[in-house]
Length: 607
Image (tube, rainbow, N blue to C red; front, side, top):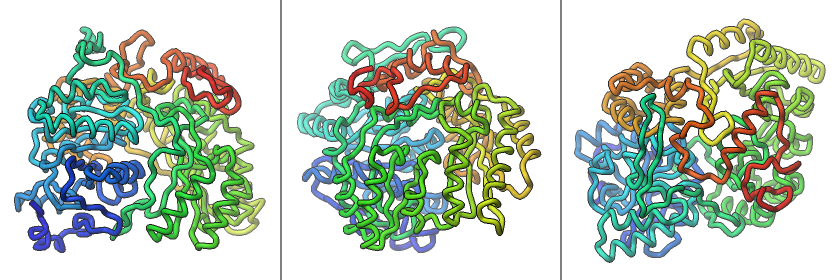
């Protein structure tokens, strides 16, 4: 049943109706598919359409003749009001059909504060929110993405999770489902067999027990399921599926450009950075593959901007050669080139010259901490001299603005480290005056509150209190020149994010209570309500500080201890101890850090 007629009657009355109309260039409709997958991004169209993972899996599933993948996004309140008043269920953009008729409803979980959006989408689809209340084989609700390395807080809402990379395991799951669908299997029969696919986690097959103090005492698997769920890895990203075309939106989106992933993983090992560990092993695409994929995408989509994506694109081993070769294409085709993830110590005059067409006036860097000591604590491996050298390249090339990202509340941070941020900004201002000799530099400083994340050396650390973070914010404000634009995150969102990131299954009750009280779009400042979240925690008899503000012992059973991402717990403990002495660990290209991952690019063997 298509909603086309109903939508035509009112879409012009909502903001940006093209978000909800479908029919974009590059979209694929397969009405006779045997297996239908609704790919749900639990946020707005503009954000979801910028997500590379959705584009990869969309193309991958649709590359199989009898499988279809259709896109679904969270409607904003004006559209939701219209849908509910007209009894229109959440629908996909390709067929405009309700997603409760699909075989799979798959969510990508990029951010903890999207969890209530997941419930909002299931609710708008007319589906029971709890997995145990959805008894039939279809639709199956599955989750993937970085948040699934600790899926426990949302385990009660999902039938299964994919831990790790999805290019291979997704088709394995769909093939298995096709077999069970033909055999009229039960949901349990399918889930039991799916649980034995590497990278698949079926939470209903595991039981969690707790100690009297509220910590986890153990996680027990049913004998038919593995005791440990091992992250799925695509070994060869050169041969992995990559789309030659993207769906081109009618309206402007956050990242409206062609994008090519140049590498996966990160060599750096910053101790606060979850992505740097959960995306290991480090793998680079060959230059020829990158150049071919870039040319195909620009030709097929018509985009005039190309982005080379990774966690740290400057670490690509042959970055200078890659830029020389790829700019031959971009210059000839009048395509702008951008490198959005670039460390300041990898920023050279040659790189800046290649990127000036996009970065004409300003640059963004993330030193994270104001002093070399604290940058050593977090293993940033970045000196003041390297920061000044990178800024000098930019200023000499004409840049007149710079934005810096720092974190407050990092382990061992002192007031001297906060003062170091102000001192560093002053040095950069002086450097600009010595190079530009006229005009003034526009400096922006963005502060985020440190959030301890699973599968990092800092997963054991407490988050600081609201009062202490506020004191440190005000201290920095008092030390900075008033002309510096200072912004910082709202503490309530940081507290809830930290609690959900390190939480256990008991938080499912809290998330459900928060949603029922009206919480959704929590990553948007105008919608987030700390008072509602706090009331939800209180109604469930749970203190968010138990998860966010408590130091974890090395012998504590962590809620994610049954997940194996390929990095050993011993490594995380060793790295945390090194951080306390401000000892750095070399990046993977300089020497093996002993994380016990088979990715070691230094010696090509298991650490």
